[in-house]
Length: 573
Ligand code: PEP
Ligand code: MG
Image (cartoon, rainbow, N blue to C red; front, side, top):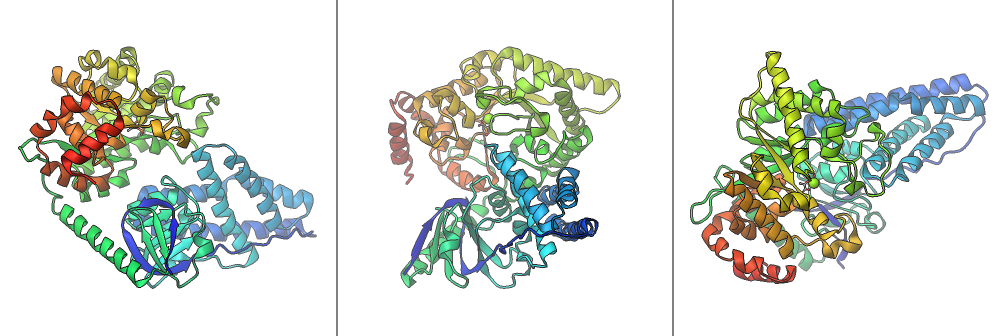
């Protein structure tokens, strides 16, 4: 009997293979009195060293398989293992309480984990996961227990685990691991992000995969719809094999478009660009035939570390991206920290409404040293490609003017120092605050381009938190209010001879694309894996035809009405 388990689709594709349970060994830690604390501390430090040696190897493996930024997770783990804030309390506890190292480590690490987990903040939760991960490794050495080593898997399997730590995921060999399912995690958890970059189908957050799946069970991972099927019947298996063939055939069809321009049936070109978070992502951008990068979220350079990145580190990252894109446009967004993206080391006071608080450009205009460092790094990198710079969360003209003035000041300083800087860097802004959208005609006189950030524009226009399930019914991209705002931003740009793009999730949405094309959007920036699908769709559309529905759509009453009309008119299921 086929058993179906619903989870969250984390990485697309369909995989069918036998289950391989990645067991987390059960460490039972006893408290023991010890007579020689000095020797016990030595034993503890020896285990830490062994764990470090292993992590070095895993980091090396990750570097080759996954690239520099994913390998950085293990550099972070190595840092945790060298951190006196963790090691000293363990040593002190062994000394003062005369207890065994396992107990002292477990107690100390649990305290840190509990503290970080209670912080209700994704970033700190990830740090808790890091500590748990390295603690497990050291405990295994202390107890002489072998922890599972996913890199040793040598037959085709689907990995089933409660959770996959970053070190587990980095060790997965794509040749053998066809997919995975976990009990916990969401689309933005480390394992999900890694699955997407490895292009392994994955379903996370199933709650019960480990309870319901045994070693050797036949398992289907449907990373398109977030389903896991256990021991499928012949009939179900056949259905999924067909679904897999359809998906593969479709991907192969789309892949033919990789070197093509994105041109509508009636000969209009639109630019399909990709959103990236790190220089490593450029590989996927090129493999998927993007015509540029429409949003480089630079905040990831600042996250997962304990201090600000230097000008040199940033320069290297920006230069790498620009060089790899070989002259194609690269829109870099200056630091957009705040909201759900915190930098603990900035030690900013907690806020009642972080999404409406001291964030992004507001923070950069006040913490100018940090902002200027980023701008200098960007300006220095500008000679290596086609750089465009944009500012996030602009609410007022004054903010844009200030940010631009600082940018031009830094440019002049560099030129005085005889540092080469590209002459014609376009300077634009994100339109993601309704006030800026309403006043787009005024902004359009001063910017070189707009990039509409619908992820935030929708939440601020509808006053519905983009992360709150209870109000998700109000998070309506197709609400005519949103469409009218988008329309007026595009019109305002065009009136001044400027271009308008979109880098929110909506830009890659199959239902939104015909509407946005009709509204005259010039650039669509989306996740790299959506590009070929979008290109195939645009090629079948006529810009003139989509534009002819503009007035009809903008005068509709509800989002439902818009959706029904678009589905029917453009034959979308
Ligand atoms: C947006 O708000 O639409 C956007 C692209 O930025 P982020 O998702 O990073 O807030
Ligand atoms: Mg935003």
